[in-house]
Length: 166
Length: 199
Image (cartoon, rainbow over the protein chains, first blue to last red):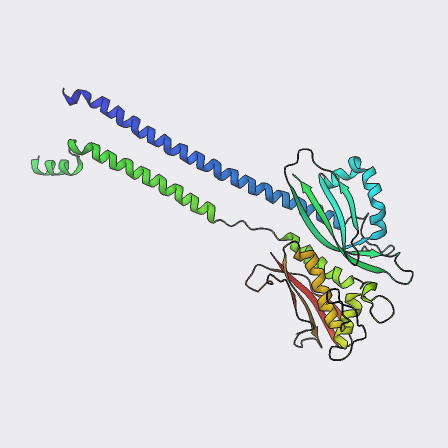
């Protein structure tokens, strides 16, 4: 048979082979890009969750319902009043959905004393239904006890733990 | 027309018909190699880019830790010999710096050794205990310093041995963050308290 009459068919076969390989390469590139994006999105989600945890933790630290105060003077930084801690849970629970949820969203806030005692206070707890993960952050604070003694104010050492849900 | 030149240029530019398939294959291989190199180049960039982790939490954490430690009142169990409950910052540090070479006024029972200690030794033990039970449990590495400065511009000396995590502290080459310096004025000069935090 004369090959000249088959030239067109050979050319078509070549083109199809080239296109086939080209599309396989494009497919690999798409799969690679998808995997990369997936990892990148997961990392971004972790980062955002961490930022949300830090934001909630900072809000808690400067919460007027908890911070130590000196009469009408400025509040003491990094300090919670134990008398307020004992009383605030009632308020937070009562107005949880109507007011505090907008501030803290889905989170769990607890205060733990390390020295000298080991008291625990769970101030706020709103768990997200079907939550996937939670991220805890810690902030060390002084716990002011005005009622321990008539003569002096005592400070204890503790931390506030904030867990946010995603 | 010069036939020779014409033939020469034709020979230079044209591919012999029995070599065309091979030339096309070479072209295809070059394209595949270029695409592979491009993907590898992209992958190298992707995996080498370091995500800069914000250490915003450190800024509050180390300063609040130092502040809380300085405010902490020594427990009654420590049975410090003088009347009243001393604070670590206002009383124990002051006592340590003033009586560093002699018997201290406060002789409190250490939280770990359970022995009556000089205020400087008590300070070291109490701070180590507090940090271990908070930052240590959360896997933070730290270095806590108390330095005295007899007068402005004088060489700063450590009042107590720097309190460091058992897993190693935060050496200079490491990515570490420093708290603000808390200063206490005593009869023997200024005392500066600060700490480094790293992960």
